[in-house]
Length: 378
Image (cartoon, rainbow, N blue to C red; front, side, top):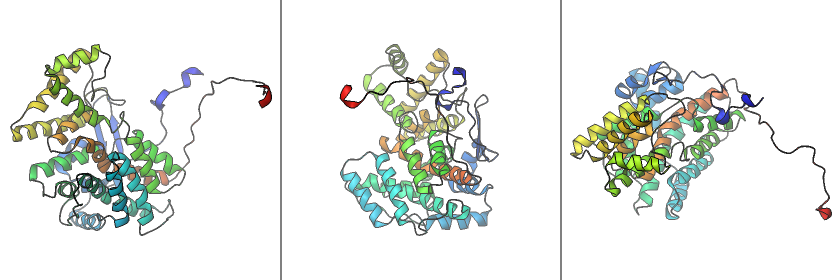
């Protein structure tokens, strides 16, 4: 029946998960029972990783051990960095470079091939991948500027290390706390497109690196991870136009253009992550003494809410948050991956437990009963 078709798999249940829950009507996001507001403000990204991978928040002793294990895995082998350098020299897109480098990590993983159904081996590989992604992204950014990569420091956190390796300068407390919270907010989000692609790959009992590579390729798209980059490019266009931001938004809609950063497949109300990132964006603007980008955002958000009834999503404020931290715009999506890899790998591990290959069907709507005509008679 035609009404059985769910385009884009909207509303279709394909799995049970204990990792994250989204209430789109109330605007709630929960990781393993904990509200995102508490986690973003009170827990570190490392604590959230531990929660996603192990089911419980760590004790202090468990966290110290976990931090040491993550720190020991951050260095990337020279052959992978050589590939990253070559891709930077070839002016590759950052997400394309990350996709290639993560795929190559499988050839340097010390465990070699392992049984996908070996839960502990899966978590160990997940830890190594997650620890190395910030090193890869920062190295790519530095190579393309003609600089050498900066080695990670074992005493710095996941968030601090990325900012340090990117800028060769230890971040201040505000930047470190803001970036850490942003990583927490992006760590998982149900069966979004990239997570689902990782699960599909894992369901064939392919390896963790292949699943993460699939996810990175999916996140690269402008309708998924690339949306945050689109938001900042939009705001820069507003600034260059010398128009009032509301006038710019009205004109864009009249021209049939989309206003980036609004609407979400799951949320009917404002994305709960947008509330928190909006606060960070405002704080960074106040600290810098320049409210321009935040003011543009508020004006456009109010217009879109009043005129269209469409609330902002997480990308709308993550864009200005990262931009005010002097992070290049085309690194916004790799940063999304830098965080979400924790969620991807948690879902992969969950998929492997009680796995069944994902094999949906399509309704055939092509021609039928055609008579074959030999080549010479066509």
